[in-house]
Image 1 (tube, helix red, strand yellow):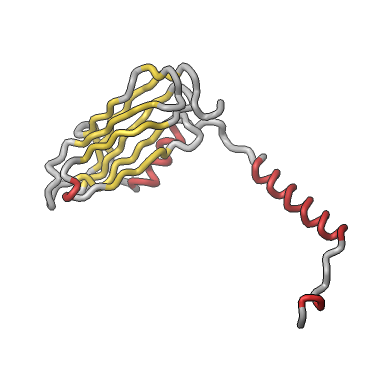
Image 2 (image 1 turned 135 degrees about the vertical axis):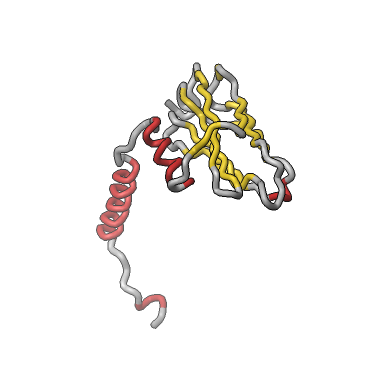
Length: 158
């Protein structure tokens, strides 16, 4: 079969197909969802990450500013007290931001070869909210730290 033997789309068929595609895209974009997550959504995100493990306080150090002038770039540092040996080390640290549209902000994975379980970066925050750092250890235990950050200007388009 040569190129000229293919049936051609009429202008009407092309316009109908393009219009249908745009309507589908608009429908997906307009699908309702919460503007911001809350504590319940954050709890659900943590549960998906750690399963049924119980969470203890301690070992996790979370440093955030108490007031963020601009939520577009909020610095944080998280570290976990651990000897980072083959038998006792931090496997993962999850950052959960309770007021953002999507609460699971980041995951950091470690091994004993990491030497130290510490990371610093910046994130966006939509509004005043609690931020959690949840650490899973090699023995299956889970620890967390939680801190509130007051955001004066939201950084997530809201």
